[in-house]
Image (cartoon, rainbow, N blue to C red; front, side):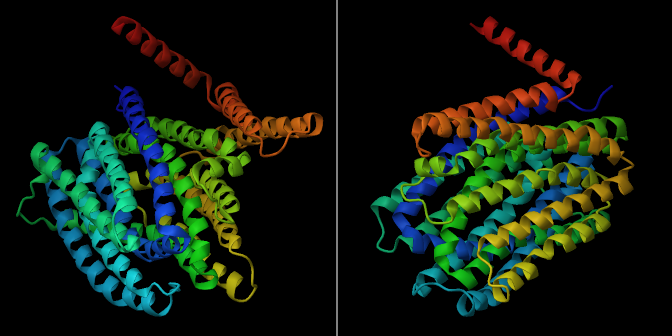
Length: 518
């Protein structure tokens, strides 16, 4: 009997996409309102300080990955008592991490803000934002085990509801900001902290009410703690390196170019992170199934799911990235009233890097399922950590532009995927030559063809109809052709015949259900 529940994956993915659609629309509108209210300088300061606090986010990301791995593993073995023990011991680690964040954040972090960051004469507001950001991060850290339990149990409906609540709360914060407050930046930081506190309380209350294992036991068992520390110790290295790709790069750009360059970078990152939720949501539904398959020794099913999910994860980003990269100026003009300089270039570079990074979640999930992540994190961590010193040299000694931070990030991200692939081959025995042939070669071919037709269409229109490049009608038609053409390519050559058959069966079943309901 198969341990991989394809219907559950499809159902959870659909729920997460519905959640993402609403969250994306609300989030994009909210960020536009906030930028209008704060202005480019205050928004740049907020994004720059956020970059400093993001440097601590490797703690929450690491523990989130560890919690989901160990919770899913115990659920796969159907060990209720083991699950409760792992959860209880994880809370002890989280309390210790909170103390570390407070000490390091309010000492080293404060010193860095005070002496190294450029705040354009808004030092008092910047200090206020920093303290609120540290407090908000602590609440984000404490919600991690509860959110991990919901995801491990694949209760994506609950996760979706809470995420939508948080997005609507952010919209309420933006509307409040428009009407009240002498210092908008200070008020924004305080209201954001209040929203993070309330969201964490909802996660805690739900898990306490519905999951017995989330009522911690006082019985001490050192074995789960040892396993968690061993796993998270190496996981932390890779996560810290990944954090440096975003927060560290943002800090360096602030140091060399000032907060006005943080604003376009922050807007570009907002666009990318919104689109990246497509693949994040999908893999959130797939990851528990991969870990549970490994827990019961179903290696063939795990490999099949790994191949399928890698292709689909990439395509989910590609189908949006193609029209967005081709029509970036038009889309940003629709979203923002005034598009900051360099936003178009930064957005396109982040999307290229995102397509490469989409291989990271599937490759990482397979290694994390084994629980043996030392070599994996050493290799990937060392590769990604090299981004910061290379960027510093590029800015300090070569006097290159801010965009080179993202170009170097793309280069090292590609190298990191090669390192990940080598680790998967050594630790799991998965045939990576077949992976290169059946997955990598296919997605590269689909990608090249996806850009070919829309670009030829634009060139044809310009040369024959003398259309203006910024024509809304041309841009909308180009977006439609890009999405349709990419979807056709994915269906025709991007997936296997059995996957096409499963897709058709799924659509037929949905159609029959809708017909019966009517």
